[in-house]
Length: 389
Image (cartoon, rainbow, N blue to C red):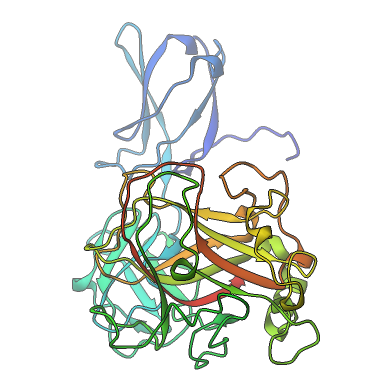
């Protein structure tokens, strides 16, 4: 920051450094330990080279840079590649139960014989023998007795703490039975009563009491006629009402908006899609609304297709043509900064603000990309908005 050069004897993986010397254009290959770096000709002069340290753990550590020139001669330089402490991004199912397989995603999950990796849920450790790891994933059966809270991963390089919380029940807006402080039902033309399910109603297990299920025959063509009743729920506020208040006026939600701003919040929920009923077309539209868009007294659904109202689109089937969770519950996460699209998947040119957090609707329709006819089953529970950090 102060433009002062410093001599590096080591740096972390994925860091970018500048090498200073002579005849550097002659270098054709460069290795940090046994990992080859990508050389970009436009970042190399005779005297300077900008290069990023590889992000892979070396198979053998020499603590050297090896520079191979166009005559196949090798020059070495003493240099230590440092491994950062672990970072934890998200968890496959934040509401997994004891004994269920869970996966934590992040980076720098490393260990050696002298320093095995450790995973802890609120002070309860996952037995090391149960952990399957790669540098970016940790998979294990959830141990008994774990309680709600943050997850900690410790390696020989340091410790990392999750931004998410296991069994996160903060600011649940809809839990479909009221047991977690959320609404047991939406409000409006499609309040969720037509898609409400109870434990035992389906072949798969509920994750946390009542839930909703979207299911019907869908046409693969984007923009095809929308079977609204079986594939949507909405909440239209009744401003001033204590029974159906504006969502953004709920005490916890309001405090989060004030403390973190809309851009610091994330919409999350748990979902399940059986392998027998995969999702192959249409987008799930996740749409907050404001009182100027709709309330119970101005009930209408024309705003669903308004390009002026940004929303997030969820099309997990897009990459492969079909998507399911193998009948397992998983956690979906959508930063409110990602609510920038129109109903057809175009850029709306705007993002949602505080005034447009009074109502909420989930519905499956359009998305701008054709898919394949299908009859998906999409179960959803514990819809919440929580801080991203």
